[in-house]
Image 1 (tube, rainbow, N blue to C red):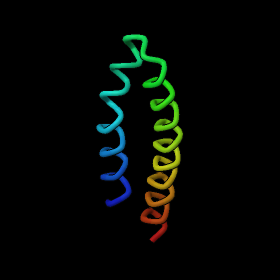
Image 2 (image 1 turned 90 degrees about the vertical axis):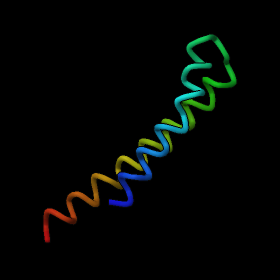
Image 3 (image 1 turned 135 degrees about the vertical axis):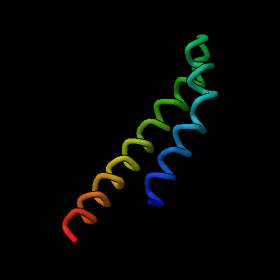
Image 4 (image 1 turned 90 degrees about the horizontal axis):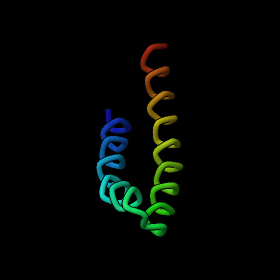
Length: 56
């Protein structure tokens, strides 16, 4: 499923900023929060795709 692969990629890409944010880097924290919003939207797309697949 393409949507799920994109979600995994997004989570992997934000990992470095999460580590920096834990270390106190405020700019990295801002990037993490923005990325989490994007990840949330992508997760919703995965949910929709799963429902479409189930209904077929």
